[in-house]
Amino acid sequence: MYDIVKNTMISIFLAVIAYLRPLQGELSSLFLIFFANFIFGYLSGMIANKEDFEFKKAARCIGEATVFFVFCTCIYAIGKFKNQEEGALQCVSYVTYVVIYFYGLNIIKNCKKIFKEGSTPWLIFAFLYYVLRFEFIERIPYLKSYLNTKSNEEGIKDTDRACQTGRGIGTDCVQKK
Image 1 (tube, helix red, strand yellow):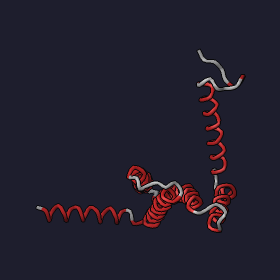
Image 2 (cartoon, rainbow, N blue to C red):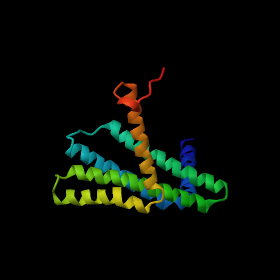
Image 3 (tube, rainbow, N blue to C red):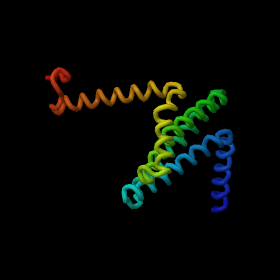
Image 4 (cartoon, rainbow, N blue to C red):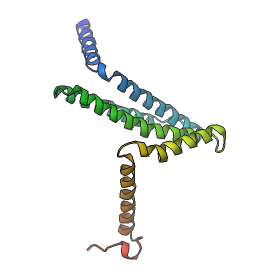
């Protein structure tokens, strides 16, 4: 009985791997970026913040990675069901590049924390962070407008929060009854 279950599980696993074969490069890229994020986040916490290993942070990192793996495989599966495999692959590729951008920024920010401010490695990572955070966004469609919209929304939320707590200034707050 054990052999039947084992062989069935192996067959299912191999079938899933074969089905997702066109996503191998994208999923490998996601794995690498999440692994690097985990390692450099751990090193940053350990070196810069004098933190010990926390299972809660590790579980969060694994959970975030799982969400994106499942998201990308679902996009691919839906595209394949709709007989639009190429469009699905392009969409998965776009999602992967966005993940690489944002998690890459986080990795670089963590690398800055690892090194002493003003040291050569710190200057390199500070420069890379500046280029990717402020200059590179000009080249990515919709990213600059998204970041501007996001910062405006956060400014509005901060104003609303100040008004609700009574710390708003003058005409910025409208009293609600």
